[in-house]
Image (cartoon, rainbow, N blue to C red; front, side, top):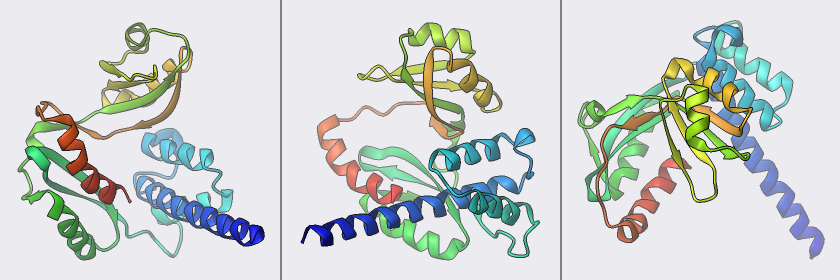
Length: 218
């Protein structure tokens, strides 16, 4: 019985790792469309760093770069598409999807937004802007001081001492490297951030929001 559970655990772990590698390879392929040299392509550099942290095999990583850059005969057809809508309590949401089949993805998103409300393009994007984002664990430094010294434009702290730093999208790598002296950056992204906040009843909202967010993140 114990051996069976161990086998199931290994299979589940292998499946989860396979899904993660597939997701990371897609991101690398899309990023590589703007250039196969990570030194001149910040997005590709971040994607490669994330893949290395996840222990992606080198040949898998290199194959994803070739697919995206067009150097491989199996050139990548993945593209980024955005969907706009509202979570419960009319909280605006933008969903970024990486897909090779827009029709299939559109159908999936419509189904997921039954727990919210899918809207037309432009319905909420006017209230969002792309930002540089660095999430970091505390390493004995004050977040405000670290933000000033690293050149971040804004920051938010969490109860566990970790922090989120915001900056211009073009400066995200510079800020992430500057923070390593006083914080431990865990990831850097260029997401969209809302310019305004919507007041809600937290407990009720969290219960209703969780289903939509979990579904979107899977």
